[in-house]
Image (tube, rainbow, N blue to C red; front, side, top):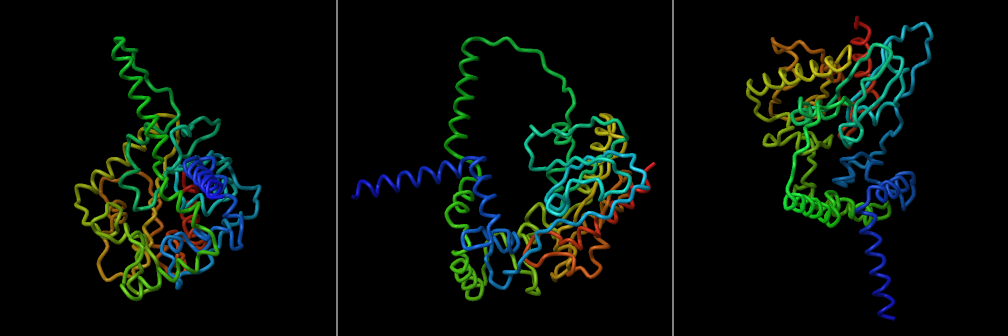
Length: 359
């Protein structure tokens, strides 16, 4: 009997490890759990991604998971552009990939920053081409650079001539590739979080996680290290957007030299894509929610505002910060790191104004 139990445990653990280490396996199990609203469904995002990290019961607020509805079709609108989007979850979690949202747009294709380089941006089109590069403030310092732009564009890259190698060097290269393959097989970069999802992210365990989280917060004043409660207690924020030591923080001290470099990088990216087939390049910088909601007592660094007001800036940037600050609490989820559909509509209105003014 003990051998049978041991065999069952071995099979179960092996199956969990295989699923957690497999992209296909994780896709299968996440799709299944997110589709359920019962005790076996996943609650990681049902009440907001920050609730799914912190499990603070005060923020167990059902999140509207609908996408922004398509506007009514208007056949009289001139649609003379094809739009390509490189963006993050602020866009693909709020919008369908559909041209009806956008002024003057005939077709849309969307790429994610998280896509591998197998999903390269294509500039092929028979119409005039617009490229929108969108990124939230906390990620823009690392993601928006010319090196990444060069890697993502689907153009014929110059190939270096083959180098003659000795038999010894060929064997060394093969061993290096083998070692790298073994490392990838033995350690998946998101294995720990995947295991946590597979084993524990089911609805009926939520109350246990809430009890633990509430006790830690109320008795010790601590939350999950990746999440912080706003100063007024009304919102959850990603810790990296609050901590002035983190690169993506709205409160990090940013010298003018870094702003200058970012403006130069944006202009270099624009020049590169214009050179390789695009007619217009538009950037959109989305502020961290904490920079818009203004719940904290410390002063933000106004990074996006300083980029927008830079005297050398020539690139076209959609910055919805000012509009989002109007009745700001109505534009963001309390338990999620994104804007809600009202906030998404505000951004869309401003982006469409820019599209309307294109030549």
